[in-house]
Image (cartoon, rainbow, N blue to C red; front, side, top):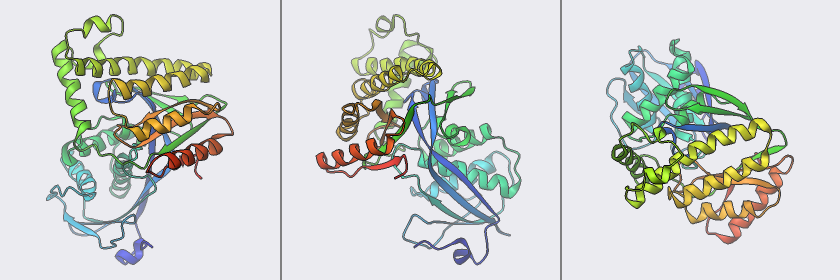
Length: 366
């Protein structure tokens, strides 16, 4: 059992801050292309307890690890370790870079957001840490700049080239309300989920990472396609005559562009469907989004495809899709209101029977 803050540090925390994980309803891999996204929060949260010190030493302990010994580093001497501590170091590094005065601190972290699940465990940690430092040091940082600091910490210190969606969602989104975000302008609107639906999120048991590998490759492919098409970002390509526009690109880049441009349109169509209460159309958009990620963006895996296929076979499911960066993680599904727990449990059991992985139902909480 993890030790409480007082047992770890011999005193009580001065402040406690929390941030939720997020699930992206639709709009995948559009954020770093300047496009549109539509995330909402999940019940799982990351909690940060913090008490300032009189020196420049930061001690930090995670209740989710078996080792209770705090990790240590000195403010101003942050150095990448390629461990979870880098997210903590990245936050203090970016705050100091932004001109904020910090003292050392004792920190305890506890999270129910599963890492590698496509549900923004890293962004939840970053926003919870930033909120804790903001409260402890009385920093004048509004919620949008706070999200940008979190993204910068993950981009420039941790080394993961993520877009801004995750931090904005963890900082601004609300329960059963989707955050429609234009990732270029950072303009946002809150869109209530339509009545008559339950949200289901199931973790496949296959973890992913954003700091390297195929995720980085996809981003570079998008940048190369934008360069070849002479546009600032793929966001700037219109959907009409898309196939003619991308006809001279290599096949792989054509696929990447096709996904991003059509996915942006699916976000706009999803908002219209939500506002109209058209759950059937919304479900169709979920299915189309998953097919695009599977076939054009090529970020799905057999386990995720199996979960989506099992969901589609259930008549109570309006739509289901991969959520998050891909290469593992989770699916999100919209189901008939009042059936979410039963549907999710059935899908998880069938998945476990047909794969080598164990699914975990995250929403609704079991």
